[in-house]
Image (cartoon, rainbow, N blue to C red; front, side, top):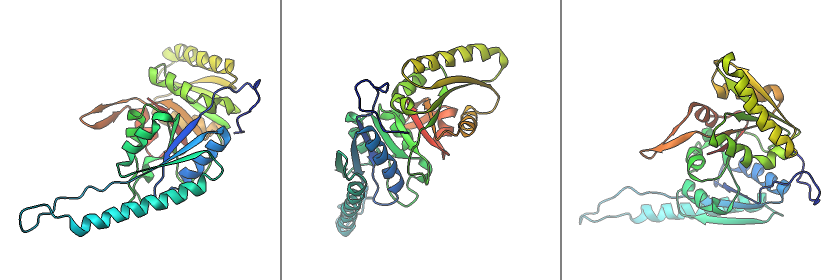
Length: 287
């Protein structure tokens, strides 16, 4: 993926002005690299959120009162030390960028959601790495459904999103329409974009192709090298999207996220749930 052209007559018009990510004190090198690289290529502001919070269990003293004492002091010092380490990592990664550090003694997901109010895109490590090293990290599902912003999930051990080839998982829903719009800055910079629709039988192929072709045509009007395909299969749609991405050599899948909140738990549709779980490539989800 090349840098965003700066000339007034360039075909590319969409861009991300601000990116936000959570920076843990350990294990954040990859997501930091991805976010900083995108900020440089889009000439965007980078917002780093350092957030950590410990909830102490009640400890009773001999007089029947709460006694946190040394435990609370130790944990408070640990949070302060962790946030300092995270800040150092962020400042090193964002050198030369317009960058802002926002520390918070709060739950990471809540802090990132709050910071996303003036950002265009959230960059977050995929859930299979969250908390593996004991760090508190934002829950990707919470961010997707609760932040009001598109979320870019970064796969393990990858430090750069190339986005030369992109697969758009298409189903004619509000969420998918929003995902295409949210991903437009990346789509306009790609060399090839495949709008992939998936259906279970030949009877629905024609309608599915018409829908996907209309989306591809609209993207071409916006300077995107897009084409449409339909796969007829009884395999899970997420699996088919991954197959299409592998065949195309794409490192990014764009799709809508389907889900809702129920008793403080996120209930997802099958496609979203599968893409959230240990993605093999970058995934941009919009709700």
